[in-house]
Length: 245
View 1 (spheres, rainbow, N blue to C red):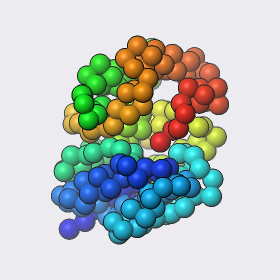
View 2: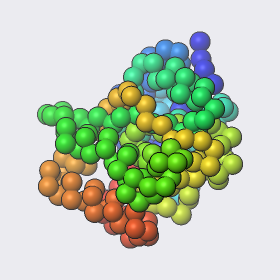
View 3: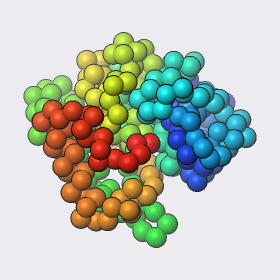
């Protein structure tokens, strides 16, 4: 039995992770209504893997996570949109959690606690920061919205979900943002209800912070976060990320 949820996955050279993610999504109970992979021009076997898994595959003429996710949302046929990174593993009851969360009409958008894990270790300090920044980012930079409107700031590796109608009523992801388009979406969706952090965990790859290391990784995340909070342009912030997926 399937549900009214469209899972959208933006990809770019994700052959090393996508097969595992799609296998995980294939055993959800209940199953999503559809899975849409939107590729930004991969040069590896990403598209081949997606097609072999039997999911819908779209090719974006212009790469970029915002553009790709908007393209997937346009093709989606279900009432709820759920955006999953290609290197993220979700709980088996993801669909039920999403449906239960959005059954509350006061909630416009939700996401999960992101556990950052690699082959060798679990990145507990980064996981804690990922959890806390959902609260401290709006508390520091939008305190009135935090206290009176229920703003929480979610990021892509937290598996963001929302109603398709609300997504398009606020024009979806900003195609001009090469980074932090997820945080921007939370601010826009606040017009339709609260942003909720669900008390469940998804697992994301630690590949980026594994390259950066403990101190450089934390310094970069805090620096980028504070610059975003003070209104720095996304074009400037993008230089801190070599590949946004």
